[in-house]
Image (cartoon, rainbow, N blue to C red; front, side, top):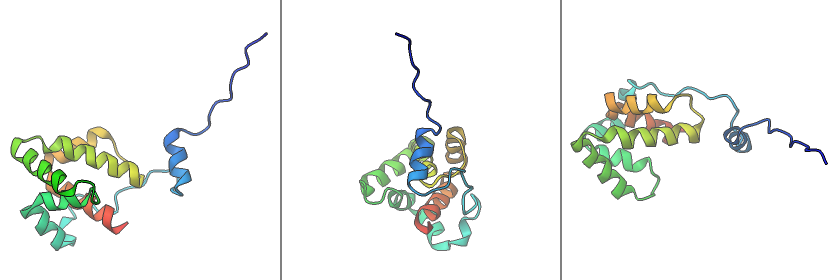
Length: 126
C-alpha cells in the first residue's frame, strides 16, 4: 500500500472568500486618502469633536454605543491605536484593501482621527 498525496489547493482561504463574494483577487487601494478628510466636512467635524460617534458607525449596530465609548476611553488612555488598528484591519479584509497589520497600527498611532474619517468614508460610500 503506497501513500497517495492529496491534491494541493490552488487558492488560499482568503482568496476563495473574496472570489466567492465577487471581489477580484487583487487587493485595491483606499478610495479616499488619509489626509483627504476635509472632502467630507460633516464626518470630519463629527470625528474631531466626538470620535466615538464615528467609531460606533463603523460597527454597523454591533454594540455601537459600547464600542464608541470604549474607543473614546482608549483615546484618553493612549491605547486607541490598538482598537483602531484592529478595526482598520477588519475593514481592509472586508473590502479587499491592500495594506498590512503594522501599517494599520501605525496609522492609528500617528493620526487616529484621520484614519477614522478615511475608514468611515470607505465603509459608507462603498
